[in-house]
Length: 244
Image (cartoon, rainbow, N blue to C red; front, side, top):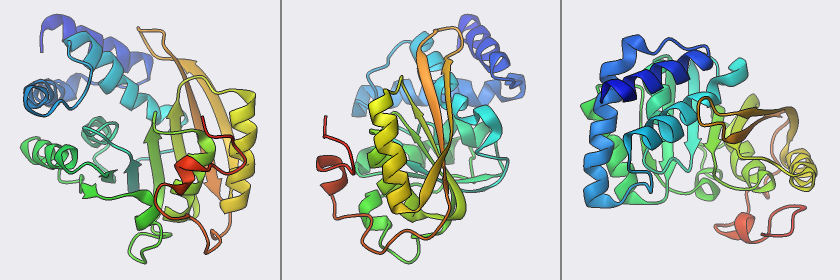
């Protein structure tokens, strides 16, 4: 990582209330591994150091706003892709037990290899889909938190995430700007599958100024047995929401 990259990382972290100086070596190695892996696997459209630092590292760490992810607990990262937000969160919050989930095997292999290279023992990658895991006893109702970064519309996220959460657990969904229509549909969907929207936090990403919204949904009761619906249905026919 160049001095410019280090400055971006430290300034971005400071804006989020985080001191990232002790973690500079880990983030520098993560940057190197991601850029090297990208040449082989086409993991992300972001190529430059600046974009990766701001739009992967700092963007991922913005999921810590409000403290809803906590300092420890079992966290499923829904739709992790190349390991975001799981890998940055694992570096900064070693007390979190993170399960990055993605249906694309090559990406999960990269996350697994990268976590091993970084010595992140709190990362246990999983290949699969939330619709499937949500019907398996070893996953349904087992997670303290589900985090999702730029994955899907809120009604879809509610159906995919809440079956995986224990009662009292929380979905922390990081999105771009959200419309009133999507929020209303998400609130109805959350109620249908056993939860309630607790917080809607619009903010700007440090340094880049990109618009983001952090939405917190608390699971208040067990999810009805019919949810989640079979693979592909939540995306094709979202609850209370015309598919976009």
